[in-house]
Length: 464
Image (cartoon, rainbow, N blue to C red; front, side):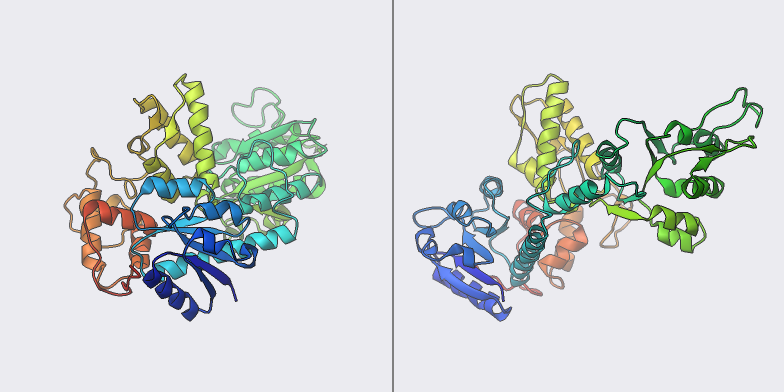
């Protein structure tokens, strides 16, 4: 049973929250101030839930004394800057009052699950003792697991299949595998299979003899042979034609390559690293990818997490990109506004790191301030950020679409208001946020800004 400490000076709120968590099988203790809280041995708790404004010291003072115990900050002051400052100081998350029961319970369960996974990783030595990988940024638990696998796999000769969404940094992983391997002094040849026309891919990879086909005026060594002694990285291997797959299989099975038009094969010593955003197993079952090649590739699989699952890494990456592009563009050092931080950390980033970097670069270029990078310039997603000069778009361009709309164009503000007003009596805040594709915090703050009060519909019993 997880043990939780509630630090709240208002007895009604504290009592209601204790009863709520007790009903969900949590072992709960209470305190009315930081001074009362530190009388406990804080290491005995799995989570501390503290109000921001307390008599004496603020709730954020508990962050330092709590050590590894996560601290969830509550605030009823609708102060975005205070909430962001709390996160910067090390709070695991913040939750804005008023909140409903589902919202609080889901936040607690999510935090405890993450803490349990981190503890398990530390127990296995994969969290705290793992050094980061050159060229890759991030210290979240999920990335430390990736680093650990890279360090283990790189020194071997095993074929590696990197799986991850577009923009997650698959080529960086391939480079790390090469540089940490005994082959580091030999070439790393990178090929994007989706970028080469299907009619040319075999000749590019395996080479050709003079006169092998129209336009083959000279003998040409292929990229596989060029990687001899080193590493061949095939990005988007799911786009490789079946004929080329058969030739690649021979390279893996026999360690030899035969150029197009040649009757002789050449021995090659190549380590293959492949990457894809597609499900090769499914493609193999559908006959769109050679099953025997799939099993040859899938010796060791490395899964790269999407940016939305990397927690604090998102803000770290954003700040690094701001610093980088300020230097490149010879701009004064800019800082992200609290609104920009809120936007960055709550957006789902379907384009992952590449999309984040592009958004930051664009914002730095357009920024007119000498000190702060305004969130409006990020323009990262119209579903998330409403800009004063926001263009009007048709709902048909939105994905996913949580409700049916008329054919008239709506601004995102109109869309948000209509959806919330039409569904808030039948949906909880959690369901509304999920349908809109935003976080509950983002939903709550939009309600405040647009003046849309909550109703007494489904699951809207408030603690305060």
